[in-house]
Length: 128
Image (cartoon, rainbow, N blue to C red; front, top):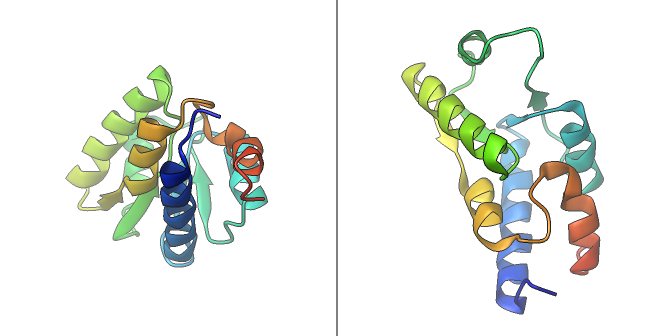
């Protein structure tokens, strides 16, 4: 297993913290399957996926009713690009962007590069 015990504990702690935050703050993900994956690991708050029929600018504008969002795009090349673009637009709209879980996954999780893979990964490290 490529993830150290310390990093596993850090990841579990951050997931628990993010689940608590998600009760009040929406999580923004790339697709419908990401929503399903987060539900499998206990997220019960609002989760919004990028719609296929909106530009990123229009999507960002549609989120202006929120003061803060949690961005959790995949941490592959496309996800990193999306995160950077969305973060910029959301901040421009006056929305605080929480990237704590994304940054941690991007740093320590070399076994999967996407949100869809989180349930299997969490099971593998003994979380589920």
